Length: 71
Image (spheres, rainbow, N blue to C red):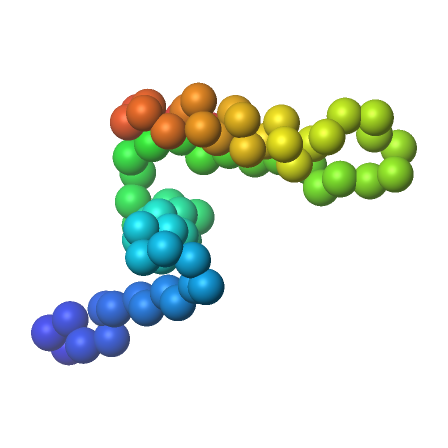
């Protein structure tokens, strides 16, 4: 139908760049974009002694410059 409905709008209470990053991550999760790493982490629980959220954020930051589609 000529691209009608091909738009995703993401609104966050954050800087506009974060909206673009989030929209891109949504497209990656739907396998509509293939560039860059996909980071999969487990949810936190009471059994862990590590700060899993902080660790995942650090790994994500270090992987940010990789363009190859890896998981």
